[in-house]
Amino acid sequence: MKFASLKKGMVGTVLAITIAPVMSFAGSASTNLNVSASVVANCTISTADLGFGSYDPVVAHASSPLDGTGTVTIACTKGSVTTVDLGLGSNPSGTTRRMSDGTEFLTYELYQDSSRTVVWGSGASTRNTGTAANKSPQPFTVWGRIAAGQDVTVGSYTDTVLATVNF
Image 1 (cartoon, rainbow, N blue to C red):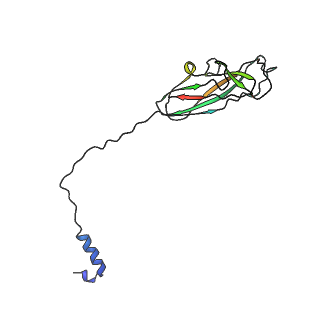
Image 2: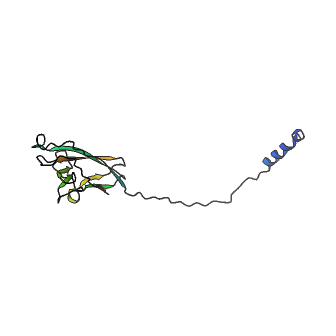
Image 3: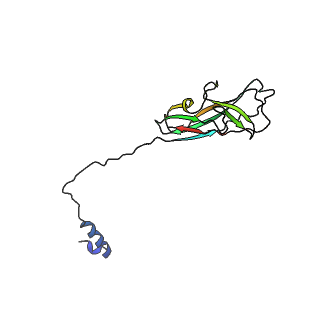
């Protein structure tokens, strides 16, 4: 035999490989592992401000309104049916939206359409945004209008409107 010419440590290695047991099974059994998850409807909402700019009640806006636009963006789980409500703001008088400079008020309105005929509010005047086709953000333009000919004091007028996505 040629083992005599191998080094002592190598013989042990060769023997270990040649005498390793071979595994064998007598049978087998199988079953299924069920895997599940549920996907919940969820949405996020963000806004881009509606800045009207300068309102001139004496000349430019004495007989013409001042228009502006903002944006409400929602991102929802695919298949979610959604609506978006816009509240009356921080300074309403009944159902009339008003900006304030602290003491005076400048009335305005928010609309769902570019022709500014469909008021965007809450409840019956909410905006039906449909069924989300995917989770990508969807922007919706908010068209605003300050009525012409308001007799207001010089100042900086603001309001905060709560935007809510329902799903």
